[in-house]
Length: 508
Image (cartoon, rainbow, N blue to C red; front, top):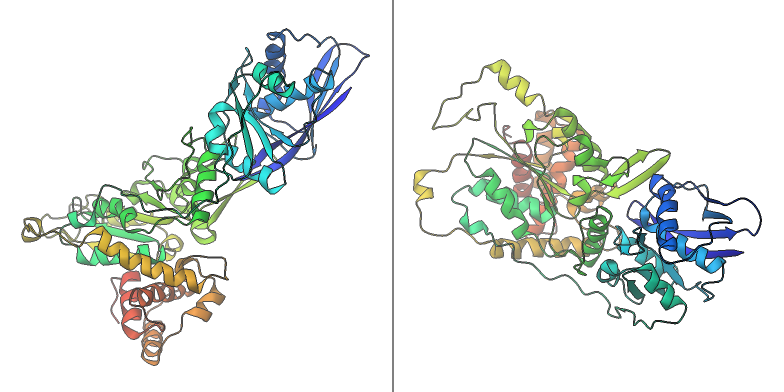
């Protein structure tokens, strides 16, 4: 007796199809085996499935039962195979005779037959839609998440007995169907505003430029100068996420188990601020399940490293690859998983261990050796990947007591949105969204300098020993500044401002 059920598993944030094949033999000693390169959760599935079926008075494990997860050469993991395994057995022995070719089945079983929610449902439901599977059976807690994908009939159940009753025709169940084409995402109020920031005009300008092109941005300054305050307000000047960004970010959060039953796309740009004691795996991703880390959870948003140089050097160094490639690849137990990591790095750091080097209010107590050791944590290659650096000075008493509010996030956001629209039109056929994502060929194509700008760039290259990457970063930032000014060509002032933001300690 043979049966086959359609299911799925996750490879990164993509759903991959799996056929759960079941053979129940009439001959041989009692046994229950699962083959097909399953992980420990799948191997333990045998006990959960046996207990669930026995507690529903189904006793047919006195025959050899073999489950194959096809294709058998692909490593698979996840407890969501419990339900399709149980249903395949019931179909093989004739308890269920309904044709299940149009169903995708997912769900974890408890020992009494109740269904438990599983992670990654959004990606696996999207796989169903893309492959023409119109119906999906899953735990009721996952219904709202799965219903984000349009034109798929989502059936949510609380227990295995309810699933059996539905498939046998004893229970009627109305599916949840999202027939709407998902709309663009509207802006969400973050509850904090740039108008609260006193003074710091240079840092505010750098934050605006960084947000306009999604450039990596470091602020250096003494304690209490406003670095963290500025960083935490940066999401408030970013435009709403595009639909593509929202879907991709929601899938990452689903795989990471960060979505419960909201049934909504993530419409806030992530702001992820890991503690400085975080490990490489926490930041970059990994572990036994190859889960996404902070760099992926911050996708389409901001990864904020407060007190950047308090992080271990190894953590800072592992950021180099995702900063360059915009994705992270994790290899675990014969399996390679890739997650998006299109984040904007925003970091705050003190200039020295005591924090007061160059401060006008307080003397620095650090030795030169201590300062050198402290700054050595930030390597040259890592610093080369930073687009903008801003020195944040202590706020003057006069600025602090000024009752007049500064420029609001809404006003800044209008300029940022306009710059993003220019970039969206420019890159509509390139597969990217922002100036910071340009390849070298795109830099040559889109970073057109006028004559004066060319002369200034030539002076910069001849006078300062900057790398090819820094040269490219200056051009990308110049392109963003030109977009903020609605200029088709990069002008001299744009180059000068970008240079000062990239290398603030140098003069032309």
